[in-house]
Image (cartoon, rainbow, N blue to C red; front, side, top):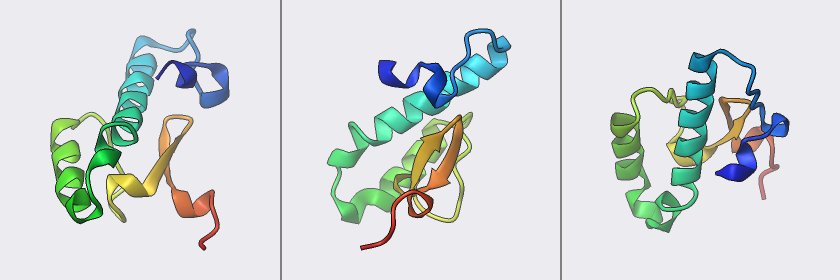
Amino acid sequence: MDCFICVKFGFNSKNHDENIKRFLCYTYAFCFIWSLGITIGDKYHKYMDKLLRDLLPTVIFPSADTVYGYYLDNCDFKHWNDKVEGF
């Protein structure tokens, strides 16, 4: 998670406390998804999606896909298809 706490990823220590809290919550959620959450097989992704949305109510995930369909960009979740071409 330390690698995300820098200006390159949108962190600014001079921000208001609420913005810092939001940044840390979103960063934690992304790191959780791609560390522990990714160890779950594909057939359980929808279950994990619901669980994470319920457990992390302060994190607003887009609803068009599961939480696995998004990457974190300056404290906003964007779809991987915006960053990586399909193959």
